[in-house]
Structures are given as structure tokens and as C-alpha cells.
Length: 353
Image (cartoon, rainbow, N blue to C red; front, side, top):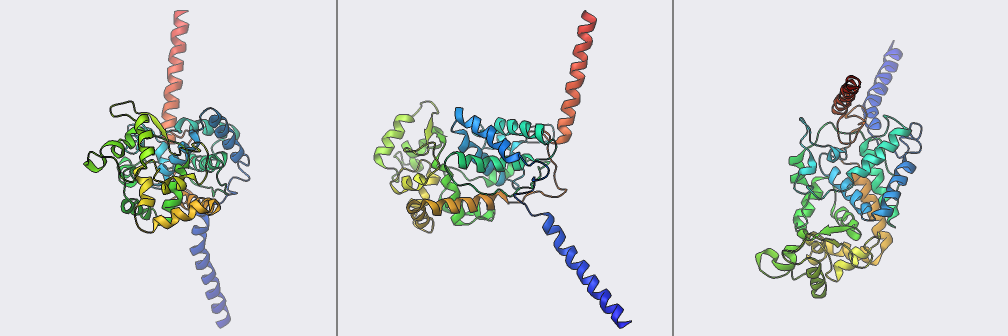
């Protein structure tokens, strides 16, 4: 009898242990998540991004930024892709996103191609994460095995987008606080900022640095004077909201030039230059990444994976959206409305005939 009770006790412990560990295992992302259900997903995403980038090299940087702006608002759940509806207040109209996000249509094109191969399997959140890694590689940057298995949110949060996304006018303290809120370190901040090694920004994000820094009526003293004149030519006061390269030397290449620029006072945004010009722990990281591109690439890879894991939805949470801009309930409503409209049009044509 004592032996039976001992055995029962062991079995109960095993059940408890399995009960504790099973949910955490289910929540793990895995690079091979789609190995059986959509084995070609990476190549499908790569082909769409590659074709788009041939015509628009800037899109590579835009897709990485889109992923960043998704993950910093209620996690990497594709909430940034949701359009306004009667129940959704889109993050796309938040101050850091309004009229500046790019790549939404590219993600939709990828989703269409993936759905044709593997309907109802791959989430928009995973598509956006894959597109970011592929954009890095196509730009000449690092590659990594992307953990997969995210699901898509049923909600968006414009208020949180306004609160969480750092401004191009932020100082180091504000930047560090924004990243720390997401569980990201100072090294993550400097590494992920390195994505500004390619891409463009609009003049309105730097005008204050060129003409009236901090209300002084003078330019930002941390700007190289020659670079200042170049930027003033591209961004005259009262002129058009032109696009300016982040990197003056290799604007479409993912390399360590971003950190070289910071060290010679040629960081485009205030939030870029402060990483080097402000005394503290970001400065030596900039110096390190400038002296060792591999160190930068390794750190960027690790930080992108870490960022991509922020508050992900897995298991039965969320859904796999049929269309990235709408939750499935709304997509179904639109499909029904479309069918009804087509049937109505057909009736008019028949009666007219």
C-alpha cells in the first residue's frame, strides 16, 4: 500500500511538472514553425520584397521601420497594419506614423502571395518580421533565423502608439526609457538605431536642427558645419518637405557607416546624433560598432530577434488574418458586402438588357 501511494505521488508530480512546462513550450517561437504547413514562406516573402526593392530601394529601410513601429505598440502582433473601421482606431494615424509609414501595400502583396500557396496559415505578424530580416539581407546587412509562430491581434492602440514610439527629437534619456519599457537595453537601442544606415527622412524632421535648435534661432551645434550647409540646401526654410538620405556616403547599403557619420557630426536626426554627442554609455557603443562591423551586425541580429519576441501572441490567442488590414470578422463583412454589390449589379444589367 505504501508503495502504491509513493508511485501515485510521483505520477502526480510528473503531471504537475508537465502542466507547468507545457504552456511555456507552446508559447515558444520557432524558425521551423511553418516547415510542414508552409515550407516556402521565406522564399515567397523574399521574392516579393526583392522585386519591390529593385524599383524602390528605400523600401528595405521602410519595412524594417514598419516592423519596429509594430513591435513597440502592444507587441509584434501586426496591429500597426489594421485600418480604421467602426471598431478599430488605426495606429497608422498616430503622430509618429501619420503620413510617414511605408510598406503597407508591400505587406499586403506578400500576404496575397503567401495565401495563394498556404491559405490561412501564415500570420501578418510573421510576414512583417520575415520581411524585416530579408530587407536587412538585401541591403547588405546581417541575416538570421527568424523565430516564427506569431498570431495577429484583434485590436490596435493609437494611444499607445503616441506614447511608446520615440520621437526623432528625443534625447538619450527619453530613448533609453522608451527601449527599457520594451525590455530592451542600451546596446539594443544603439544597435537598432543602426538601421538608419540606409533609407530616407523628410525635411520636417530636421528643420529645427538646421535653423532654430531648441528655440535658439541657431543650428544644432552638434552638426558638422559643412553637413549643415548641405542639409540647408536640401531643406530650405519654407521649402518643400523633401527627402534626405540618412547616410551621405552609402544611402542604400546596410553597413556601419551610420556610426562613422555620428562620430563626424553627420547624424541626420537629433535622436541619432545624441547617441554619440551625449556623454554616457551610448558613446562607447557607437565607437565599438564603428570600429567593428561584425560586432554591429551580431548585435543588430540579436536585438532584432529580441525585439521580434516582444509580447507576441501564440497558441490560440489572436487569429491568422485573411487580410492584413482587417480582422477576420471585418474581412468577412466586406466580402459579403462585395458579393451583394456584384449580385445587385448583375440584376441591373439583366433588367436593362
